[in-house]
Image (cartoon, rainbow, N blue to C red; front, side, top):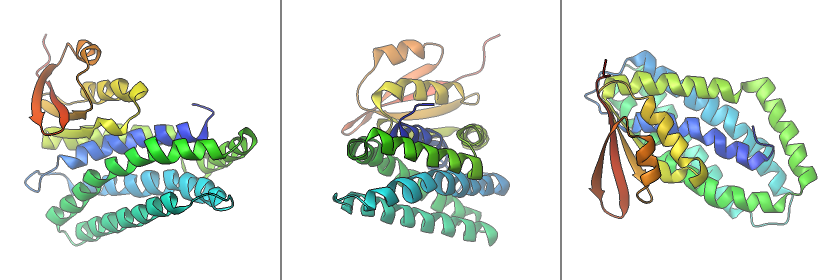
Length: 245
């Protein structure tokens, strides 16, 4: 793992986006097991929120408050964190009441919103914060991150659960939708490859990208690729057919 705290926060977004890509394609007509939906809510609460946001809010944001900088971008992110918590709370309430369709709608709303939130953090907020902390302060932040890992979980646990949920949900829905532009360019292709190769048989991954990548298409040559027209966005579908024996 990188020794830069803001790179760590960026990398922790990847499993969150993976789960979001599966939830975003759910429809109320899909027969998603209530236990799987419960597991998705637990992932969001325990890892996307409690584990990851502990580092963002309680460590980084609190330290930023003590500096003489414009805090309004962070306040905007904090408000969005609270808003998403409310959406997930509604999903959990609906699930407890046996309202599966309402739970799916709320989880899908969360999944459709979160990529834009993550994109702003990855490309605007974190680079800005990286410039206002010196190396000694970053070392202190890293030590706090280690404390969070010891108390609340680990990135590996987060990643493993994201992999499990992605497979379980997409196996039922047959589709996933990923906003790849939320991922930094140096990691984007690898992230798409991971999701593409994790697809169940006959499932489709719709990818929202910034531009055509011939290199990525070469790396996906074992899968079916179809370009689709989407206003203002380069998009394509990846499908994993039946394995050839």
